[in-house]
Image (cartoon, rainbow, N blue to C red; front, side, top):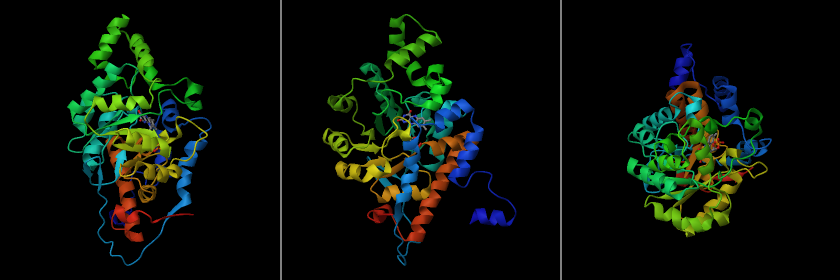
Length: 376
Ligand code: FNR
């Protein structure tokens, strides 16, 4: 109502109120190479486009006269009671999007109560990123490096810094075929950006010393040789489990059999995601895979991301069984437009739309949404 009242007085909001406008303003705010990296995806981006478009194949059945004047959007996720079912997906280039992008995003998490999944690839060390998240719980995303000791260091640092869970991303042990970046030869990490967690790590420094170099080129070379872990297999679940007593979620799981194997192997949850279509093209829209993953995961929580662009999308993913929903590009566009305030705006708009949709369609809480989605 506040926005309409302002409008009646001739004042309209200075921040975008639709995804199309968010994308338009965000794209204009970013340097072309950065925009290519953020907005681009694998191949001709058909999977990326389909991720968002596939939401149109699902609809929420409206129910009337249920007394939904008060809604409860809170959820429980790996032992955390969260005020809303939204998370900020890990994004590893925030420093190139905005000055102190990681810290600004962390402050938006603090202000909104929406947890940030902090990427391994950040311009500020994970301890500082955690500190800026204030009273909002945080999750740490690990790209398991090829050096096991370094992986263990990062996880132990995340534990000590007060993160509540570890998200291990599995679909990025090699970089995807991304024409927009290939055309420019642009990869922010190879320009030494986003490597703060490595540079502040004693194991990384020891490896650097062993290698006999210390300049920026030596750092990037060492990082590139360690970043992905191509040898990982299901046998490594035992290693993951041995690293920490924190809950572990595996990100990048789309196949029901993989979800079952992860949970049977001692993992605490799944992030059903195809990396926003950034890693492989020719795939299946992630939302079409969610129900199968939820069923296979049994009682374990499933976070969903890839293609969520509106509050209605959030509601649909919850209705299809997600415990919580994460956004990637939307909050990055918000960051590009207005820093912390832009991220907060995106989060609040999505949650307001989700809440209003549940109000209109007669759903009081997230449990009530289960089974309320129809294929259209
Ligand atoms: C990502 N994503 C990602 N995932 C991850 O586990 N670690 C990371 O460092 C990154 N980095 C990253 C950078 C950029 C620029 C983007 C856009 C995405 C993937 C991210 O967590 C999430 O899976 C997708 O962004 C979700 O899809 P949407 O919401 O962007 O469609």
